[in-house]
Length: 285
Ligand SMILES: [Zn+2]
Image (cartoon, rainbow, N blue to C red; front, side, top):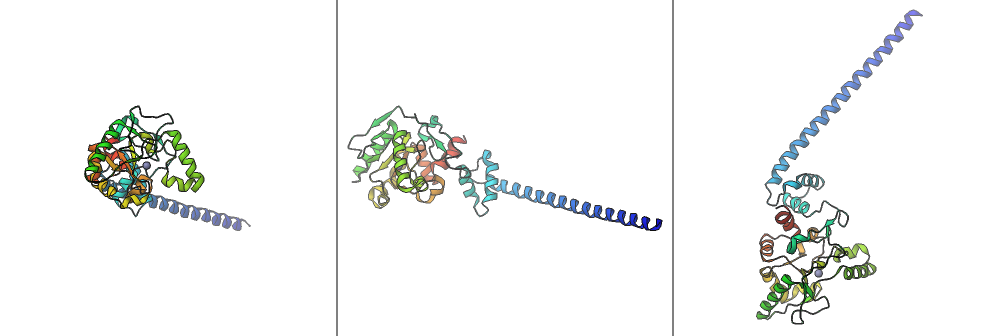
């Protein structure tokens, strides 16, 4: 009887020691693997950071966002990661929003991340005459309007007609317009071609939809003329064909934005949208 009890105790102790050892080895191993993974990640991050820093439009403040975005989009080139994050594509449209800095004046950014308040109305709007305008939204801010008229006059000398078909639009006008589109096509579709109230660039008074508001405008001589000359008068094609993800809008060959001659030339030369230009040359400075 005594002998049997002793044997049971020995077996019991043996089992405890064995389980303990196995557990110890297992936990230690997991820790080691985890440490190794962390090290590998850190090395990858360091070398990726170094590569990102060599990119032309790298912004130091955005480094953490670049790394996160790169991790989520492993197939993208570095330059695309930079362009996307600089343009806020890692944020949620119409949700991660902030007020537009109107002090940026001609360079103020209004898109699906930056909005104007309901009562924002530029105080230097002027009305274009029939010589330069067709349509009901005939107002633009003074500097933009002056440059628009200069551009139109220059085009006339080349036998090209350039007229504003839609300029400044108030917040309440955009409310009606957007609601109408939503009713017709649904919110999701409407969001691809119409801005929500407050998020429309037309409220800046720095925009002109030129001649005809449809895609056939692309095939006109006026469009070709604008391609070669708009930037000389401070205007840019705001929603280009190959940058739809960056701007958040379908290609709009008719929609031009005044940014001033210096910025327009730079955007033209470097093939940048206002989103990319703003992040790097305005906000970053
Ligand atoms: Zn427009």
